[in-house]
Image 1 (tube, helix red, strand yellow):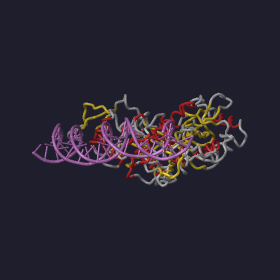
Image 2: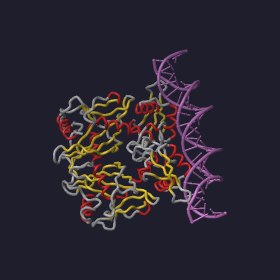
Image 3: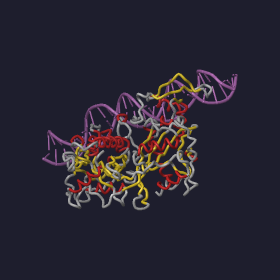
Length: 255
Length: 255
DNA sequence: TCAAAAGTGTTGACAATACACCCATGC
DNA sequence: GCATGGGTGTATTGTCAACACTTTTGA
């Protein structure tokens, strides 16, 4: 990606001063890059979001994870590192939500942050998370007070998650390698804070052909629920097929 | 948005060196910010994309618009400015697609660019575009050779446009203040490179209630087509309602 | 009066919803 | 044998797609 800066300069030079369609502004911005991650998981039958205890400026308030981008890493790598360091889990689903400008604190201290949404399989930490004492998973209805304007970002991430999961088989990212239909049921109920008819939901989910029934059963209930796993030849988190997974789509607005 | 840098530092200080979930990387990235715009309009019954003639490095190739972000403007302002300066049109629809890392050319010259998609009403330049000689609108099937890896970005923008327009009343952004049903027909045909049944399309469009029929007619055809305008109390480009506007949604993949 | 383009309705197929009972097992 | 939770089928409704003719008017 060897584009940008020279292109602008050179293109600008070929125009008279006031007419160049892409002439640069007076002074170029140099900014500090940060990455912030809104991390979700599914734990104890609830959708949860990862938050960290406040720093010394605002001890009582919480925040989602964020970190500055290193000099020699891409923002995607940063997000991956941030998730791994804060949860011990290798994130399989990371998606950019938006990039926004922070305040200019002093000359040269302008901060631009790229917001990611991360879906984690909470069942499989690759390393111990003992080190991450200050991070906690909260259900959405029990979230603590957040710092600054973070609440808005969290809300838009939840909205985006609901929107996207209604159209694409996305929530499997939150489940372990193998899972049961009742688990899926609880997952969708929790994400949409609703009671979705289990017959219709399982019909929709199974009709996608994305699930493979395994002979094993989860014996924690009396009858035992069959385990399913993803059909990896059909399922690709990079290019999710468009499948209507929820009724009443009209209740959502686009991102 | 007074969060980021201090938060990280302080939070980091409260952890032992190897365990902080959000500890900063060794050295922070300071980057040059650029904005690139994939601008679409609807002209002569075709969807068109705005491209500029190559600079001295690659004279024969074309590029979409891009510019560095000024020291005292937000990326959104930059995109707005870029569009206005290159087309004379005030863009009503600007949406972030993604942010991506460029190469590190030399220490301190790392470039990060934010990609926008812009939908323009080509009928209403606020100022003359005579000054913008090197910019041209191309139909998608007649696009010239693009620089570098820009083709991929263009393709993903077109894909995103198709995806989003299939679910939301988005393409009105490309139309003038008042427009006719045949114009809408041509617009959708062109965007999807298909022949969409006009009876079904007009039914879908009109059933949204977003259009208001005016008494005037476009007299350029024999019978004359009625002009419609948007119902501004219902239509809001910031929060587009989810309305299925196209059949065969399954032919698209998610953004 | 003819040609060109606008405008409009119906039907059949499929998909989505609502809804309730049987089954397997552990205790 | 009973309580718990898993698993399944159907009837109805609504939605979507396919399809062709009539209307208007300018030339």
